[in-house]
Length: 104
Image (cartoon, rainbow, N blue to C red):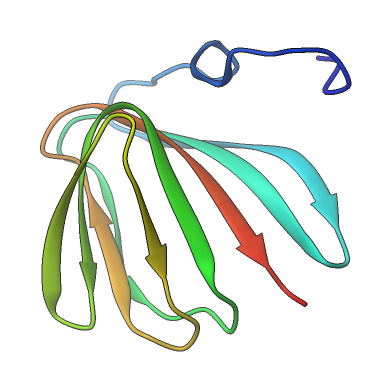
C-alpha cells in the first residue's frame, strides 16, 4: 500500500468472521489513523483513551456509546469520542471505520 497515492479506504481492510480487524495507516508522534472492520455482533468493550478520537464510518453502521449515551453512526457519518470519556463500540451489522486519534 502506498499511502502517498489516492486510496479507497473501504478496500484497504477486509472483514473476518467473528472478529474485529485493525490496520494502521499512519502512526506519528502527533497521532495516528487506523482502519477497523467489525463483523456483525462484534465490538469493543467500554474503555477510555487519553486523547480525542474521531470515528468516520466507511461501510455499514456502528453503535457507539459515549459516557452512557448510545449513538447510531451510519456510513458517511462521523463522531468524536472525547478524551477520558468512557466509550464502547458495537456492530449491529458489519461495519468499517477510520479512527483518527490526535495526541497533540
